[in-house]
Length: 349
Length: 213
Image (cartoon, rainbow over all chains, first blue to last red; front, side, top):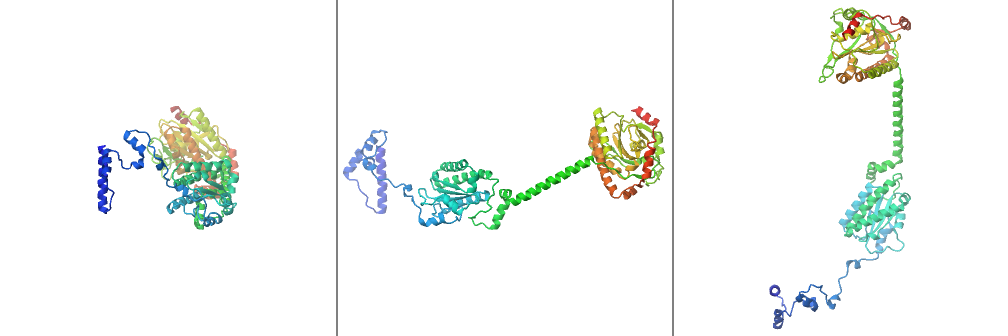
């Protein structure tokens, strides 16, 4: 009790000093209040705690404190989500739905900060360079509803055409469960519904593992990119990006050409490359067959030398061709060292 | 030595000198003679097959291998020279005279090997090419794996002969002229075939050599 009093007095002195410094008139304890305070009848702040809480405080009871009705009725501060817009301003319709996208991340409302935008766009651009399936991520606020008649399917059909491999994602910040994805017809023709649904579900699950809304987009897009990689494998035999309608990043043609030159997928799927590859393959097989045939013919070939005649040498009736003599007495010396130089057959023994 | 020399211009060496050393009578041997006994039966069979294959590829030529364990051999080169001139191959073919033969002699005691060849092969083989063939087989000679060594020697010799054959097809006169020979006329070929191999007697010196082993 004494400790409590000490604390209260200290606080009082501090406040008094501050008040003096600021030259403010602070409330003063009346004599009655001082008596009640010293007697323990008055507890500063008890009006906030409620009388019941006060009793329990002094009883040493550890039961949960119940606030008084007045306190319970105090209106709480509005939750930020409640303030989120539910409609999309018409001024954004043009960028969202009417025109081809200018980037892989479509966020005309600037829901993300510029830094966050750069990071997300950077990843989607990286994915587009590495993959034949581009991701176009349309970002909406959590509670925003799409205008009537506007759907992801319509955006896909209007801006991404029938050709090419594209994926349109309608992502609602902070609520990954609302995500919609639409794939271009060339993908849906090849990739089964199960695989497509699985890609969406896994990506949303990954996003839900994170608590922050922006981090959720990151997890979602990374997982989606991984899932698209496997779809690409399935699409291996399909023409890729041959007649891509849009190039949202505005990459120069030369850069694009370079990217395609180094992309194995685009190489392997190009009909010209296939033609050349086929030609080379046929050439290799032909050469290999020719070499094998030559080897086979050589094996069976007979070598008939033109007959020669000449004078006898050294009076030898049949042979005067004396070749090398080589010793094999030492394993450490090379054959050339152990060669018997000179034709000693010319010398009388 | 001049290509037409009947004897060495420096010392007068002739066939008679080696005849005096090893005998002046012809000796009957087989194309594969392993008097040293270093080859197993299977190895001998494999080697005979190799030699037969060589003969099928080169229908005018034959290959002979003589493996001996000499107590004392003053000159393996002279012995090879003498043997190819004095050998009467009992399993030989009359159409393949000794002029068309290649003789590989190995002295397993002296640990040396040499190669001798007939007149017909002088345009194609020389000391360097035979050294190449023998040195390629050197590791196997060292390990006394004679079958492998002979396989390599034969393979190398075949390669050299194939090259020579291609050269002879293009310009035989020049090739033969380099070794003091000329293209033989058809009459001459027929005459030699009719004559056949006239050497059929075995020399006492070779018998003596064999008995030493």
